[in-house]
Structures are given as C-alpha cells and as structure tokens.
Length: 546
Image 1 (cartoon, helix red, strand yellow):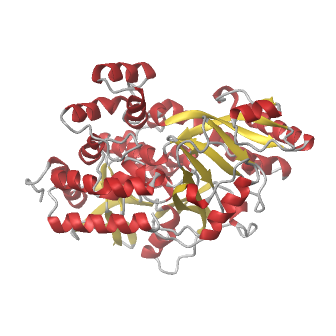
Image 2 (spheres, rainbow, N blue to C red; image 1 turned 90 degrees about the vertical axis):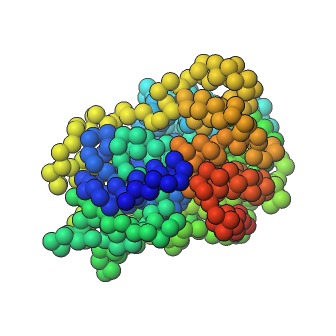
Image 3 (tube, rainbow, N blue to C red; image 1 turned 90 degrees about the horizontal axis):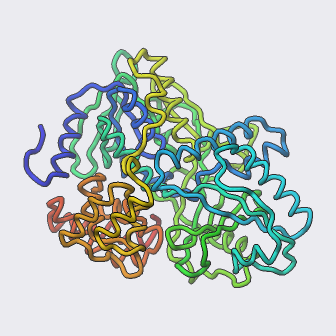
C-alpha cells in the first residue's frame, strides 16, 4: 500500500516500492552502477517495463571511484600495437567512439582535458609521440584536440611542478574527463523519468523461480526492513564486482566469472598543482600508467592495480598510497607528502577471468553477457567509457532471446540525460546574471546540474544559499535538491555522490555532516534516533574506508 503520509520524497519512494511488489516487469536489473543504470535507461527508452534495485546507492561502488577519464586507454593501445592484439585495438576504438557520446548526451558533466606525457630521452619522446598520434588518429572526427610535441620549456610552462632535469620534451594530448558519480545519478534519474521503477537502498536477498527459471527477486528496503517480491520476464545481474555473489543466489556452485582487482586514488588540495593540464606518468614497475589530473579544483592521482575480494568498502592499503607517491615524486620538483592528501579511496574492477592472463593488470577491459544459471542474465566486465554500448548489447540480447517487444535500439541510442537539453555556457551565464551567483558558483552548479541548475537556484533564493563547508562551492540548496529530485536517502549519498565533498576533502565533509543531517531530517521526517544513526555511520565511513 502506498503511504499517503510524510514528505513528497517519502511518498515517491513508497510508490516505487509498491510498484516493485504490484507490477510485473519485462526486466529487473540488480545493481545501480553505470552498467545497471545504463541498462535501465536504454531498456526504458525502448519502451520496456523496467525495475532497477540497488542495495546501497547509485554508483556507490566502482562507478564513483574511477580516475574520472572518459578515454580509449593509452595503455591498452600500447598493448594492441606491441602484441598485435586486435581485441585491444577494437576496445580502444570503441571506447574512443563512446567517449564522444559523453559530450553529446551529458555535455555538462564532461569536458576535454589536456594531458602531458613527459619524456626524458629522445627515444621515449619519439615512442610517446608516435603512440599518442595514433591514439588521436583512431579518434578521427571525434578527436578532442590535436596531439603535439612540446619542448622541455613549453612542457614546464604548462605543468610548472614537472622536474626539468634531463627532460627531453613532452607530448601533449587530449582526452575526456567526467564526474562519474553525478553521471551515474543522472543515468538513474533519466531512467526514472522514462518510466523505470528505480529504487536505491533496496537489496535483492533472494531470487524467485517460476518453472525452475529465475523470474524475479525478493527485495529488502535496507532503510526500513520491509520486503517486496519483484517479478520480471528477465532478471539482469549488473552487480559489478559483486556479480558472482548474485550468481550464487541462483546456484551456490556456479563458477566464478570475475577476477576482481583494486585501484586506489588520492586527492590533494587546491593550489598544489595550479593549472588545468594533467600529467601522464608512462612508466611504472607494474606496467600501468599513473595520472595526475586537475579535478573539481583539486588534484587527483591514480591508480594502482592488485588482486582484491568483493567488498562494500574496499580498504586503502598504506603501501598502495606509498606506491603512488613514489611514482609521482620521480617526476616532480617538490615531492608530494602524505600530509598533502585530503582524501583517498579504493575502487574495485570487475574483470572477466582469462586463464591466459594471471595478473589483473593484464586482463582485457571488455565485457561479456552470459545467461545461466537458471536463466539469470549476467553482464560482467567492461569499463565506464563504454557503459552505453554494454547496456545496448545487454538489452538487445535479452530482447532477442526472450521475445520481448521493444522499440529498435536506435530509438534509445541518443537519449540525452536529464540536464542536457538546454545546457550551454550561454545558458549558465544567463542564469548567473539572473540570480547574481558569481562565476565560481555558477560554474559549479552548471557543471553539476546542467539546465536543471535553475531549480537549485530557486531553492537558494528561498533561503538555502549557505555554504556547506568553507573553501568549497557546495550550498544547502543542493542537499534539498538531492533529496527531492535525485533520490538521496542518506547523508553519505549527499556527501559522496550528489556532491563530491567526501571524495575531495574528508575534513570538510565531517564539518558539513551535521548541517546536511539537519536538512535531510527535516525533508525526510527522520526521528532523533535516525539522525543520530546517520551521524554515527557517516563519521565511521569518513574516518575509515569510504
């Protein structure tokens, strides 16, 4: 039964939970990361009845913990060339095409970024130049900027912290950068706007069978403990690194599809590396590359690669932090110290097992779609940049195999995300003038909400324009917007994924927590006990592993 009491966000959530119980869907998606939310969006745009359940929050796992690059992968291209690996070549080419889709469908959440690859010998200079020109050539008309060679002095002018001793020169190339968590939320919100029933903090505890086939799931609202039985013609397992755990619900003896790896990132405060140019460190002991990238006014450094086990809050090993600092400091005039780190986190990669490649760093980032056990469809592997292609492949596969009636894939391929329709720099400038925002705040709101920033501005005018933390652009109105329009249910939903404060600056996030809890308590009708629990849980996460 739908609850007619409580706030509007409460009522919307109650209606969604009731729909899970009462309706029969074409597709039930388990997992609300980039792949799961992308599947829900694509299937809804093709006219299918879709439900999506996510046990935590949209993008709370791998999909909010990336290096924030929409890219083809320069390391994968190197492997394609040096090993004559056509599979890696195709993956890079496909990813570069999909990179362009970010700029078409979510222009406010993505941007080109210039990145330097420094060379300390003439041989390296020629090698990097050839590889990155090929990368640019593969992008074709989707290129984001012309790759070019720079002399040592020119490279240091763009990245003044770069160590000039022995510097032969550098190659400047362009890639895409995006806000992964906010794009994931936009996917979920867009799917909902297209008719999907989308619920976060709803965990699939048990799979339901009809005639020995999987036909749904028993889902628990983890905020209230209430349960609903969701029935669907097809169940798609898009649980990312935990996909094998969902497969085990269908068959405890099912063989593992995944080999999970861990990658960490660290974030430095504003001013540590001024400018808008990133740095590519092309040589590391494990064969990966490390990036030093400007991100939301801070500096992001990552990543590592090592074996891991599925976890909701993967740890950040001190040794991995030391590794990143060692690799970065070899290229800098002034070394980065642990005291410079404002935040860090660990993310898990759902890599498809390959008996020919034992090291996780060597595994290909492609995806597989497999059916079984008992008719459960699992989508495994892949990478953020190709989420749209993976979603289309998954939906097309189940439409064909299960005879679902759906519109052609082309009808959904160019579906813009919420916030994109009217977005432009001119639109943001007009809103800035109308609401007297100032360039910094207008830029932040435009990059976060696209053409929906007017709604946030209206909440600011209504008295919620106060900053959540000194030195950061986030305002109280964003908390209300997150609850009312973006399905935020916990303080960490706001701190980590509707804003990015927890990922940028943990101390600032701790400072903002009580005010966010007050605003959410009022919006969602929390009891004093629920508010206290939120404060305790949030504090534990901010003090430990996000």
